[in-house]
Length: 154
Image (cartoon, rainbow, N blue to C red; front, side, top):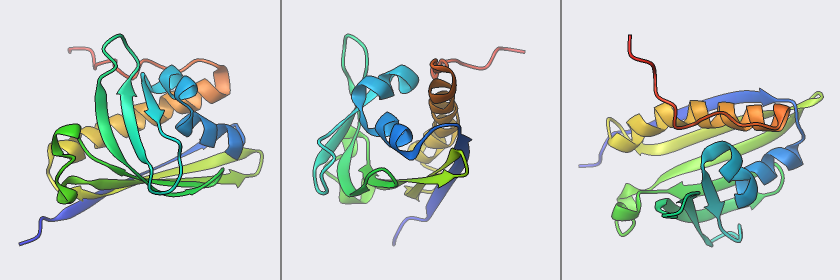
């Protein structure tokens, strides 16, 4: 019996260029500034990629493969926890669509093929909004936000 799947879509508009947005997603020296992690790969189709915590431990938090890459408009990657990397069914997919939109960019992030109700689905539904808000802040103001911030207790 197959597991029910779900997806998450996030759209944001950024005062930037498609090239700058694409670079911010794929260049480790930029991703660490808004995500606290580095996306590490040679970004060729079929290549491995890793999401590495940008701290002294350099923990690999997510692994996958580059499925499709068309700079600066589209990147598709597979996505899994390193602990589940050996299980093909554990992978989800992330698609970054970067579209010029007047004098800005419309960035659409679609994270699909997620197991409904899973810890990964729950985590990304909370994680993507703050990460993409931080990306927008970095590109528009030069400074990202704290993606590790937690809600204040009431």
